[in-house]
Length: 68
Image (cartoon, rainbow, N blue to C red; front, top):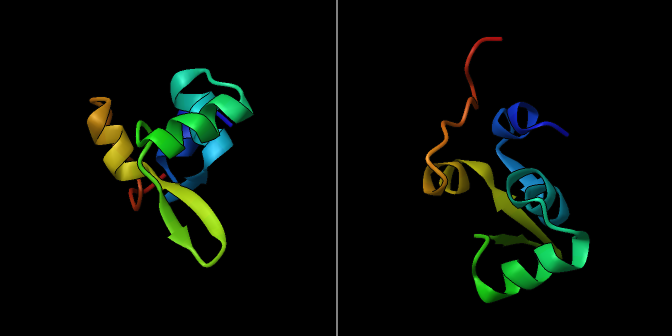
């Protein structure tokens, strides 16, 4: 996944967010999410990362809902 693809989605998985936005490996991404360094939401038993708040925190612009 590229950063542009991630910015076009509402949520991404914790490992995807860690890799794309921070260059982290899977376990490091989950550790960062557990510490609160990566914002997460729980949907049922799944933990996902909302892209818009993360993008804003990093000074990026989310492209969710924009015409391609």
